[in-house]
Length: 171
Image 1 (cartoon, rainbow, N blue to C red):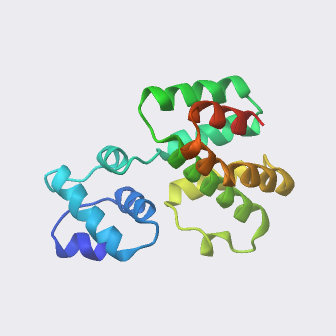
Image 2 (cartoon, rainbow, N blue to C red):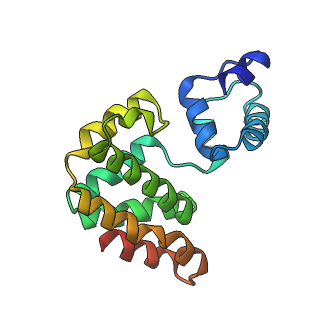
């Protein structure tokens, strides 16, 4: 990631590169293509905000807030979050995939001896996840991941994707 940016003489912060890796889902070829798109989109000056917009990703802050709302069983705040996502034109299935991955990270923090070896996120995001992991039991995390694992497909197939997401998150 950083090597490509350096070779192209483009300054891209670690946060931008982590978003790029997240959007590419581990594919180097996709990562290179997405990097080219991002640098073109930003005229060679990629930012976190531009990467979030260009790739349709959810910010770490939004994901952490959703985790806090799940931990607090705050259905009202979760419904408001979904409303905000809809208003912003976000892909609800993509949001669920990102939230599921975030819950997986929490599960890793709860169960692994060396969680840092098993997740690839920014240091800041890892520290925030580590703090929040204790708010969940392993069983709760497994249940939430199981419920959310089928939700992206259901959202894509549904005439009422918002309702599918609301039911899944409140469940």
